[in-house]
Amino acid sequence: METENRKLKREIETLRCENAELRETNNKLKQSAGTESELRRQLSRTIEQLSQTRTQLLDVRDRLTVTEQVTEATQRRELQQEAASHNLPPESIYEELRSDNAQLHVYAKLQTGW
Image (cartoon, rainbow, N blue to C red):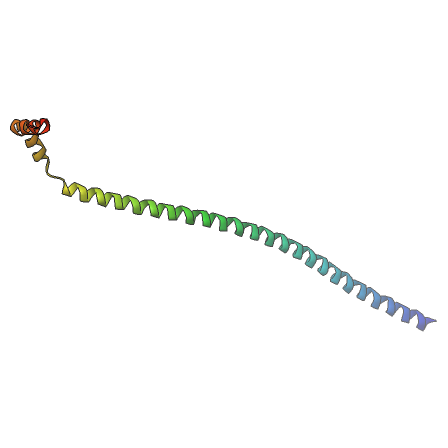
């Protein structure tokens, strides 16, 4: 009987060790499942942030395109105005025409058909 007792005590000790190992494994699995769940949440948040960033990037790209087009049109208009201003006669010619009454008189005759 004593041998049976010792045998049972050893079996109990072995089962306790196995039980402890299984608890540890169970805890690791629970922790792993929790970690996996957290990782899924983080992944979901990251995907959402990526989507928002992509949308913002597209918006900024569109605004940049519009800005570049406006800048190009403005520069083109400025160059055209600059070229036109170089083709204008100097102010002094306009002053001469205003003050030359003889030319005004000729102009009036031309309008009335002489």
